[in-house]
Every structure is written in structure tokens, then in C-alpha cells.
Length: 357
Ligand SMILES: [Zn+2]
Ligand SMILES: [Zn+2]
Image 1: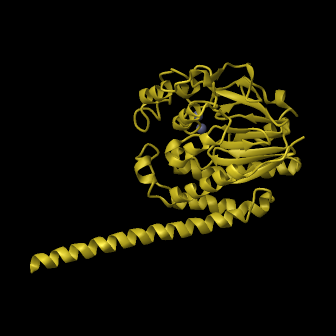
Image 2: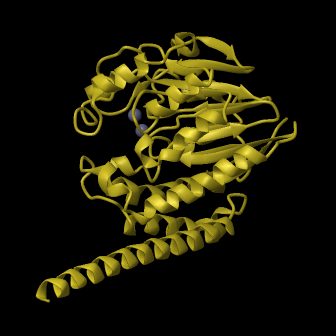
Image 3: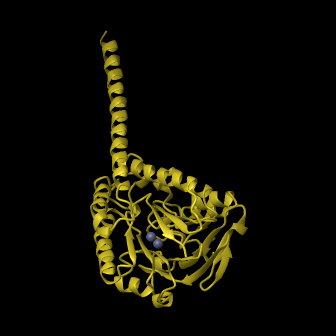
């Protein structure tokens, strides 16, 4: 009798566990869905002052739900239980749905912000993915490889380059553009991301498994190539930070889609390539703060500046906290001096429309 009682108790305990787990998941989904809808009611076309509350709320949301405290910790294992994971997936699914169904006219380009410095740019004829990285963030990320005609990666750090995505793209016959010196390089991810979160040898081996090597297009500094109708120039650049990071093959990529000129400055500082050489030659600047200042933006004088490399979870909680205030400050400074330049801090899954010339 005692035995039956114990079994029954255990059974009820399991049921309660399943039920509360289910309820928790449902609650998380409702919470993230509501927040996502709220974000959509503050589109990036709105003024910065109007959007400031939602940007701050997004920052708080990331802070409150940050999945780990130690950047070298067990990211992959704790991440999938985080409400941020549900939220990110929701935003990514929304973007994927829009990328699949929207068709820009010849007078416009659509740009979706995916993660860190990762964006998808869609014109009437081409879809290009730039710096799509951090593959552990979502299993759905690789789906983007089915939606693009071309992928560009500024440098081989995991927050900028997803190997899974690159490989799936080449399996689909899609070319990928990389700085020369990446393929076959041993020190692939730098020391910090070394053995703990990513095995370098494995990463290189994965790359080597790409069957059609012709689809890997390495670009040396100063080279210009037209790939799938996109004219791309690679500018010399040095990754910021200590020596092991500075030796990372890195480029600034300058490319043209539907007569619209983009410059992506990734994790590199304007040393080899002076910014004034881009004066009035860039329509959309994809950059990272605090690596750029208002004077530098004013020198380039683009139509649109997207402030990226924020809420990059692999850089730890503090990096996520400090960025937004810097971004808002920078955007305000530029706005004060040249209101024509639109500086946009952007949230995962958001879309902007750019008028072509
Ligand atoms: Zn980097
Ligand atoms: Zn980075």
C-alpha cells in the first residue's frame, strides 16, 4: 500500500512539473509576443526621441533576461531556456517571413536587422546577407542561407560569421565573400573563443567540407569584384584590440546594391582607410559604436547610419548594458549638426526602407 502511495505521489509530482513547465513556456511566449508587438508599434522610421523609450525597454529586457553572467560560460546550454531565446526566435521568424514575401520595387531597398552586425539587404533583383554570425543564437539562422543570393563576411569571428550558415549557402550554390587569408587559417577564432566555446580545428574542418570551393571568394585589400551583380571593394582594415585580434583577416566592405552604396566597418578602426576618402560616397553606413564618433559620421555624410554591434550576447552582460546610452548620445550629436543624416539604433528583426536613386 505504501508503495502505491509513493508511486502515486511521484506521478502527481511529475504531472505538476510538466504542467508548470508548460505554463512557464506559455507565459514566456505571451510575454515575448506582447513585447515584440510593442516594438512593432515604434518603427525605426520614427524619430529618435519617439523611439527612445522602446529602445531603453529593449535594453532592459536583454539585461533582465540575460542568460548567463560569464562570457566564457555555458552559453549554449543555458541559452535555450532563456526568454530571450524565445524572443529572438520570434523576431527572426518575423524577419524571415517578411524577407520571403516582400518584393521591393526598383525605387526602394529593404534592410532587416538580424543580430549583432548581421543584416539582410533586399533590392528588386538581389538579396544579400552581411555578417550573419553567432550560430548558437538560433537554429533558424541557417534558414537565411535559403533566402539570399550572396553572403559577405567582414572577418571570421563567430559574432560575424556563422560557419553553418556559410556552409549551407554554398550547398545552395550561393557564393560567400571573405577576406583573403581566412580559409585554412589555424588561429580561426582568436584566443578568447578558442577551445572553450568553439574548437578551432573543427571550425576549419567544417569550412574545408565546403564542396564547391569556387563559391568561396576571398578578397585581398584593394580588390574590386562584381559578384551576382553586386560590385564589392575590399578595403584594408585592422581588427581593434590586442595582438591576437589584430592579426585577424579583416576588411571594410564597400558595395553597391541597386545604385545604393553601402560601407560596412565591422570591428575595425579607420586606420589604413581614412574615412574622408568616403566623403559623400556612402549612402548607408553599417557601423559599430563606440568605434565611431559623430565627427567621423559627419565626414562620411551618408543618408542613413545603422548603429550595430549591440546586444551581442557573446560579449557578456556589461557590453550589452553600456552600448545603448552611447548610441543614443552619438545619434543625438549627429542629429544636432546634420538632421538630414538619419542615425538609427535598431532592434532584432526590425526592417527599414531606403529610397534608391
Ligand atoms: Zn571581431
Ligand atoms: Zn564583433
